[in-house]
Image 1 (cartoon, helix red, strand yellow):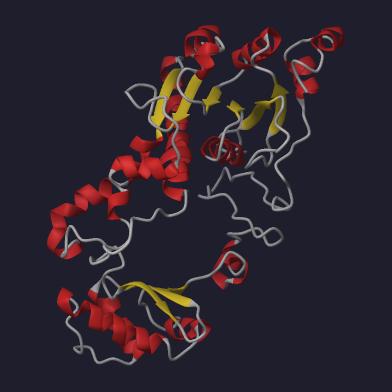
Image 2 (image 1 turned 90 degrees about the horizontal axis):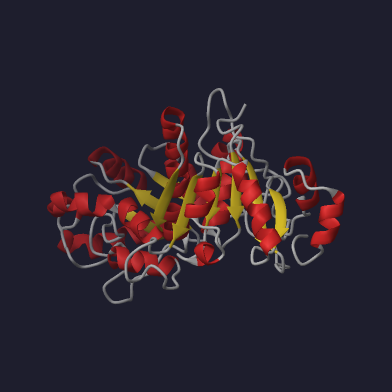
Length: 378
């Protein structure tokens, strides 16, 4: 039995953060019902193993259906800007009154309050306003974001999933639900707490503060960066500790004392010399060499290669057919149920289960559904 078995979640469909949040809950056993816009013909991301309804929430009957659905649910995921559901009279004041045990999870860019609450935003904005983006990249170039993984997914989906599980746990004691106001900007800041904490060790971790790309962890150091190999592929070096650093030098053929790794002025020369060494062999040849050495050095694999990596294959980290990542982490007694087979072939369009849910769970009759017509549900 999966950890979240028995939990029923209503996911109002939004952009990437909310669908991935729903996927996390679904992977670990929750029953997730996506409520999509009636006119959405493009499908939705991360729709695996979710049930699907298409409702017109602007129609009084569509609103009524969502209210009845919420009465029988544990969690509602609201991905909209503040005020959208209130204008539809579907905000927490209404829905939590109908179901006092409801966990109403509001996932937005800037939170429900404050002067920017209703402004449009994306991952890049969350990173910029949080202060975290100011540490990415190099001095001679504008800051660069790690795709949309840190804001949308890390600071958004994953932290909000934790919040939902915490609220459900607390409900076991109080019997009451609550409203979660999760700002993805604040989520990114929280994820970036290490940046603030690491300033206590500025001499070790940020020797060239406030410059970007010239420090220990921001790819400025010769022992924490990627190097190109003879075939144009890359190796990732994370030899921070002394023993790993020495193993790195030994495997590359350098003498132990040939560099002073704490002399930041010599780092560019070290990068050049180590880079020349890596250029003498292909990535796979270096991978074989470093398999014998404990040096925190690994090949940079592309998305097609990860399924063939021996460790990933033995661990079954990726679905062998679709190549899609399997759910993580793993539980000893209550494993995830997420199935990734074939999910690269789907376009996100799901067959609607609206009719079954309306009749079997919400008690509507066939005649009522006929009266609703296509303006209400699909």
